[in-house]
Image 1 (cartoon, one colour):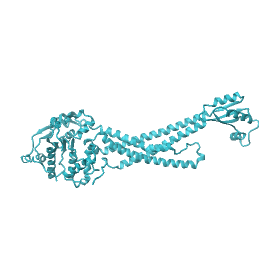
Image 2 (cartoon, chains in turn orange, green; image 1 turned 90 degrees about the vertical axis):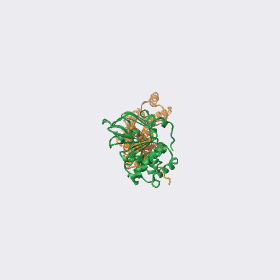
Image 3 (cartoon, rainbow over the protein chains, first blue to last red; image 1 turned 30 degrees about the horizontal axis):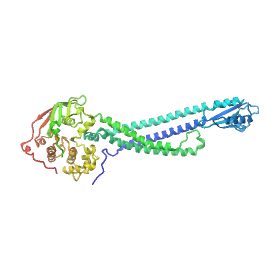
Image 4 (cartoon, helix red, strand yellow; image 1 turned 135 degrees about the vertical axis):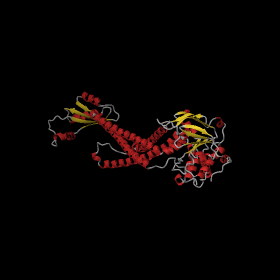
Length: 290
Length: 250
């Protein structure tokens, strides 16, 4: 009776089962960190784009009708999408934390505010707005929110670097663990390696056996880790949506094409890392023998 | 059957020139050994336990580099060969290890086929040959058993079948009868002799069993104090007359 060819390496043992668990856990953490990094990156882009496209103009010594005229003037400037003067009620609402609900004193010289929104891709409008208002005789100050946007960008770039560093660290740890496990597997199967070596197997043939074994191990462990990360993100999204009103400043977790790509790539990278580590380890070990 | 190539008669199958071997900083196990084995020759290597027989065999099957000197197989100085070339040279050598070194997760059939798989042969190409060889060594009915279920003698025959399945130019056997009864030992020796006569395989057998050596009229090399000395054949007159074609093992 014809029998299928057996692998020249024995089936997995307990040591590889432990390695499977470790690689799976590392892939889970790496995928989660990658998704977090990606969400943070997306949130940073959205926040800064939103902040950088808005201006607040304050007019001193102007009444409501003058503010409306100024808003119309600003709306006609190229690159301005909208310009809207704040109503008295809106200004009172902004100042309420300082003056209470009884309203502002009549004689208080409160500046009138105009909210300006720039068109997407418009150049820096701030100087143009100031020039136009001053030329029309207004005493105006334009706040481009640049300082606050800079702080946001800085904080988010630090967050991205931290997340990417975690991904890199976890990936490096996975590779190191796999390399260590491969070396242990090689030592445990030294008898097989010796027999193959003496039978005339080339280094790449022997390395190939271990590479195939660890490629599949990394792929399977990575898949399990990625699926667990997917499940975790799904839970986080569900929790996030249940408390949507209170998490406005947190990065919005979602699952789009890029997130799914991360989850697909994770096991492939784990498999490739395992294959690479196995190949290098075995070839290095074989070079110590004739 | 292996074709006898002209170069087999021009080059020594094995040539050791001033070969010494030491492990790390220990004393030399082998010291300035010169040896020439012609293609198609049959030789015994003997000596006391620990004298260095296995170490010398390691040099011959290219598992160990000498500390000094040169090992040449089939005219190729091994120190000048690349790793791939050394692998190619190893494929011309069959080895029967004293402890068999069968792979426990493979069947007898798969163990025997292992060198052919290493050579990149497809199972469809070698299946019949391997089955016939196993039948020839008396394991036709047990070829799909794993080594742990085979007796010592059966494992020995699997190891021998694995060593000869590629029809090597050089067959090296380290104490090949150390684990079998005298009757089985005699039958294995006849198998080696038949390979030598029929296929022109150069055979080197390491043993300290003088009874075994007396069965075949062949030169005997003795290792003592790290030196190699050639002795005359130890074959008994009655054994010398037994040069007729040997019977296949049951």
